Image (cartoon, rainbow, N blue to C red; front, side, top):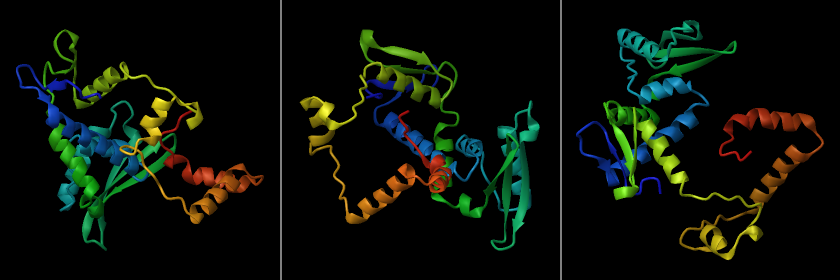
Length: 246
C-alpha cells in the first residue's frame, strides 16, 4: 500500500526511483531491519547500524583491525560522552585471525560485542554490507519522496532513505483504518473472510499433541502459584518478545 504511485527523486534533476526498483530497496531495508533486531541480542545495535551505513570490518591483519577500530570510533563515539564506548583488538590463536571488541557502557553495565572472522564471513554481515552499498550516498541534496498522481500527489524533502520509509508509511497509515478484535466472533462477515476464511491468503498450521503439552507447561509456569519458575521464564525470554500490543 505504501508504495502505490510512490517514488524517490534522490537528488535534484535525477530520474525517480519507483516501481520494482523501489520495492526491492524497501524489501532490503526491512530485511536489514529484521536481521539487526535479531542480532541485537548478541551484538551492539549501533555497531550493526554503522556496518549497514558503510563501516567495513577488516580483520585480515593487525593494522587492518586497528583501522576498523578507528572507523567504528568515528561512527560510534559521542564526543560529549567518549567514555561510553571502548574498543580493542585481540588475536584469536584458534582461528589464527584478529578480532575487534566493542565495549559499551550502558548505565554502568558493560556489554562486549565480538566482531570475529565467523561474523565477517556470515550471511548476516554480507546483507549489512549490501545495504551499505545500496543506500550509502543514494540520497543527495534536495532529495524528495512522493506519493500519488496529479493533483493528489504529495511530497516531502528527505535526508536519507530512512526518512523516505517513514514518510511513505505514515502516508499509507492515513488511508488505513485499524481495528482490534478480541475474537473472531466480533468480526463482520466481510472482515472474517478477508482475515481468516479466504483460502487464497489464510495460513493453516497443524496442531499436535506435543504443542498442547508445551502450551500447558507454559501456561502453568506463567499462571501457576510458583513465583520462581515464572521469574526465570520472564528473565530468559523478555528480550525475545516482539510485536507486543500493550
